[in-house]
Amino acid sequence: MLYCRALTQIHHIIVRPQFSETIAINAGRHPILDHILSFPLVPNDSFASLSSSFQFITGPNMSGKSTYLRQIALLTIMAHMGSFCFKPDTIYFQLLSRLANDNTFSDIGTSSFMSEMRETAYLLQHVTDTSLVIIDELGRGTSPSDALGITAAVCEDLIRTRAFCFFATHLHELTRTLIVYPNVVNLQFKVHVTVSKKNYACF
Image 1: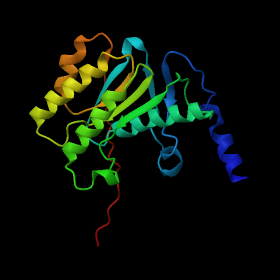
Image 2 (image 1 turned 135 degrees about the vertical axis):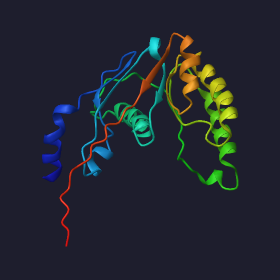
Image 3 (image 1 turned 90 degrees about the vertical axis):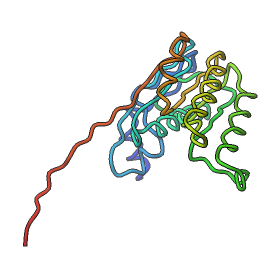
Image 4 (image 1 turned 90 degrees about the horizontal axis):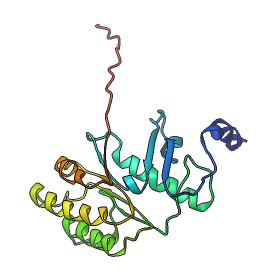
């Protein structure tokens, strides 16, 4: 009965996915965090097509970039499973990801940079025109100058494909130099800080 009430409360914001050539998320939310957090999540719209297939996502720490990437991936998986979710979707044959906080048993005894490069090499070798790629903070395991060069090369390789790629980064130089490609879009997350007034009593 509790499940039925919860479903009734949210049924107006989930829809049956419609498969097309674009990604169109209207007021999308992370499907797990939206139910386990005690405070409301801020919904986000997303749109990607062949003319905007590669999207840089920048913003301050804790602004929600990683949650945004995971949200897109989870909603895509839900759509392919036949679940109702927040968006129409396109059909993908694989989801490739490189996330900053993912650790596996195979990473034991290796440096973070080696793990990054190994996963990135696998991603570049297997990406196709029907892939969805999410990458979070590539290059954290090396120096800023080396990270910029490696990340720029990886981005250019992905930009030349027809895969939809969402790329979160703190390397703002990339957003200025790679915007010359017509399918590159720059997105920026912003935060609004509010200070609540509290009454303090002195004894």
